[in-house]
Image 1 (spheres, helix red, strand yellow):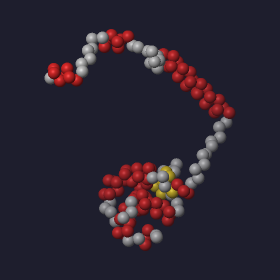
Image 2: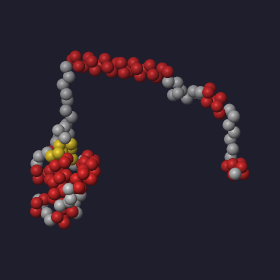
Image 3: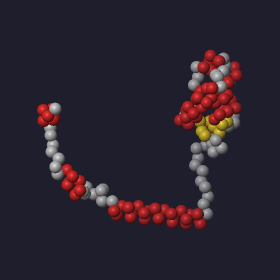
Image 4: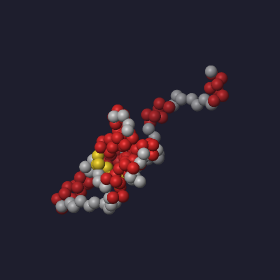
Length: 148
């Protein structure tokens, strides 16, 4: 059924996401968040103040709904209109050499940090910690209740 043919009462039973889906389905082209939400407000005959109060919630709802996709140009579309193939960006050899050098530097930095990090060793004991704990006494619950 077309949105234009639906009564206001029928539209009010739908979520904003469902109405957005129907709008995008009928339009067959992308739309930005603000314009999409304004169309919903108009269809539901809501006050203009609703826009500012609810636009963030609407954006979050679309972001978390797998039926929608936010495109690079900041416009929404239906995910089923877009392939899920990964895009491969062509790199020339100079860029690849730079990337490899950066990766080598990162690996070297991680190795240097690991050399000084003895906390992963199971037998590691910090002498300062033991010194701080030497005066502590373990008290069971019964003794604790007696002191109170």
